[in-house]
Amino acid sequence: MEFVPAPGTITMFSTTWCGYCRRLKSQLDSQGIGYTEINIEDVPGTAELVEQINNGNQTVPTVLFPDGSNATNPSLSQVKERLGV
Image (cartoon, rainbow, N blue to C red; front, side):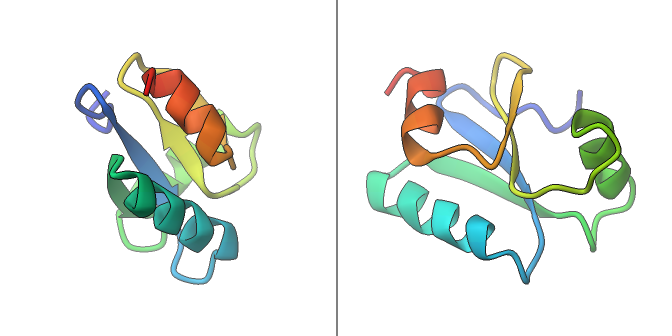
């Protein structure tokens, strides 16, 4: 999958208006965890990918991990646990 991140980082699908996305980005920044943010309103095909992951819903943030797994609206502690940091 083209959006699977490098080890130690995540890919976060978001929107500009998502408060949960802003909160998670701020927390990741404060912990020094790298991420690639993809706005599903700007990148063709990503809204559909998020829908596939979330049973037809465009729920953000949706996060992809280096092992190819995903989580919807994860907490910082969940992200850290999945990354092993």
